[in-house]
Image 1 (tube, rainbow over the protein chains, first blue to last red):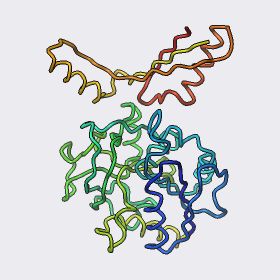
Image 2: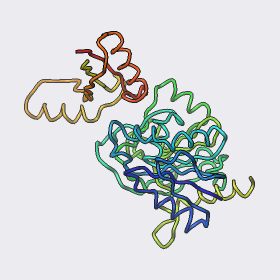
Image 3: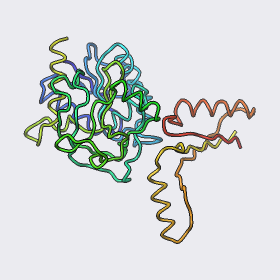
Image 4: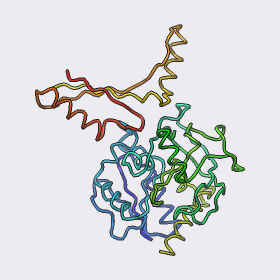
Length: 232
Length: 78
């Protein structure tokens, strides 16, 4: 499996993604500078990493969405290739209009770093197929702008078409405002596009995969991707 | 021509920064409500036709300066 990780000025989770894919999963994981215009040939998965691309200037992800490499990421997505955006990567995918909605400042106004629990809403995706619907997994968050927002009509559409991939929940999988760390609408932690090949999420599965470093709640997603590629 | 683009969060969008500032002002005893924080962008746009310059600024808003999911803009050609 060949994974490309675009690197923007200010990305800081690119190495986490490369470590998770390369060292932990044993995939070929290639960093790609944002000024490049082509992803490596035969890229199967693009992980748009977290961080503070371009210092979060203007809006989080707004400038990175215009970077030369993003045109090829869009082409890759249009061809059905897999794209996973984590944290700032999620913000970039929204700004690039690969995903709907936007990420606002956390309701508390604070940067939040914490371990959170996510409930799997879609277990039929290449990103989740090794998990089951309503499974709960623990992963860290670390963001100041993770408050997912979308027009009410678009929210209804998103929910109706099963666009919500993950929701914040209690350790037992209960849903409720008290389990949402950042004020996100409907407790949305991650969403997927209509075709099911572009997923954005605020939590960091790539930071929870190596037992040497801590809990491994994020492994389910990487095992899912491995399964998806074994079949392809 | 000098153009001033004022970007505001849309009315329905929660503005926690505005809320925090409002609380701060209440702390000083000011009676104030609906405090909203926005962004002011100044641009020098070549051309001397106001309508044309405004149209260019609008295109800039559509492409980059404004995220229509959460923001709206007003354009002032000075």
